Amino acid sequence: MTTTQSIVTAGADAKAMRRELRRAERGGPSMSPGRRRAARRESVAGYGFLVPWLIGFLGLTLGPMLYSLYLAFTKYNLFKDPEWVGFDNFVRMFTDDPQFMQSVQITLVYVLVGTPIKLAAALGIAMLLNYRNKGSGFFRSSFYAPSLIGASVSVAIVWRAMFSTDGPVDNSLSFFGIDLGGWVGNVALVVPMMILLAVWQFGAPMVIFLAGLKQIPQELYEAAEMDGAGPVRKFRSVTIPMLSSVIFFNLLLELINAFQIFASAYIISNGSGGPAGMTNFYTVYLYKRGFADLQMGYASAMAWVLVIVVAIIAFILFKTSTRWVHYAGENR
Image (cartoon, rainbow, N blue to C red):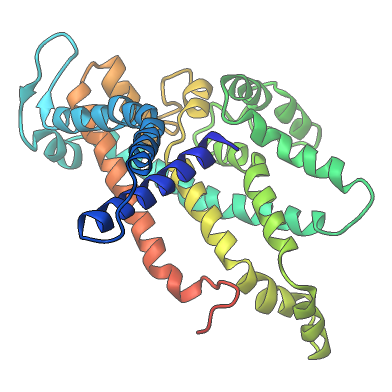
């Protein structure tokens, strides 16, 4: 039994014991002293399993979040005590910081363009791998491998070398007479390069799509074929509706991950956000404000704006999901 299962089991047993104690106090069948002692031990054990998680949550998550919320309304440079300034950080952010607005625009382009392309690539490859062909296991592992690496520093360094001037990509295009002079320093190409890096790591949503595809009953496709449906019609009328819950899950996760892009953009631009601020994504600019300019109060305000935006997007997705997400056995 895993630790999580132990916690759940202990918690359930403790609740049952407490119900029996309450029934006994209300005049129900009395519990023996041994049974009461066992109930108390079960309750203590159940809460004991939760203590490490509660300590970690309070000390490493909730506490720092509340402190950063306080700092968002202060002027703080790490060396002096925070000075309360109210909403000045937020007012300055939206009215007197052109770099902030540029970082928002670049991030939105990255999210709104890169996420659909990544999900489309993941779904397309998953559909190809769904067929039981020889060697499909090898291809699944190969396509998933980039996601295991993640947005690591080593991948960003290799990617920057590949797309820089005289890199392998630039040299290959020059062979066909296309001279771009490198993607890293090109204002028009650096964002597409970042999107291409994100799309290349489509392995995680691909595996989830593949699992969802295997749960679609083949009888639905057979019924569609009997009605004269072709591949496009079957994809639109069977695959998409039956896969809508998986699409919703992947869409939510990938949107949240896209808003948090940092390591690859920071490494590829050498921390400058260049060229011309085109890799100055929201989190990169937040980092520069907080740790380069030592404006921790302003950076905290930026972080909370990002939290609120992501929360609003998640709320909208959940509210609209009732219109397009289908679950098996659900009547509409």
